[in-house]
Image (cartoon, rainbow, N blue to C red):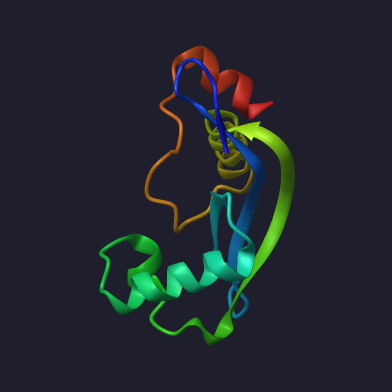
Amino acid sequence: MQHSNNGNSILKNGRVYKIVDENNNIIYIGSTKYNLEFRMKCHINKLKSNTKTKLYQYCCDWTNYKIILIEEIHSIFRSELLKKEQFYINKYKPKLNMSNPVKQKPKTKAVLKQ
């Protein structure tokens, strides 16, 4: 990982993914610099530690869930990856995301909706 002058890190690979409940198609959108198998294991471990988020409150059994790659981007700033994640949150309107990865100004909201 390299760093720019403003402290925003450049990721070798960034991934935007969704976790899908296959029984009722409820989704969660996320982003990561890790491979998806590792990221899913991180989510499962957080569930075991009783993390109090919508995703972990809803998903008490991970057997019906799968993680799916939406987009992979090479050599991307972390802040740009979060903007990509926000774009897909706006597009899919997932019920399990509690917050936005990007603080939005009114102009930014209009751009991300496109």
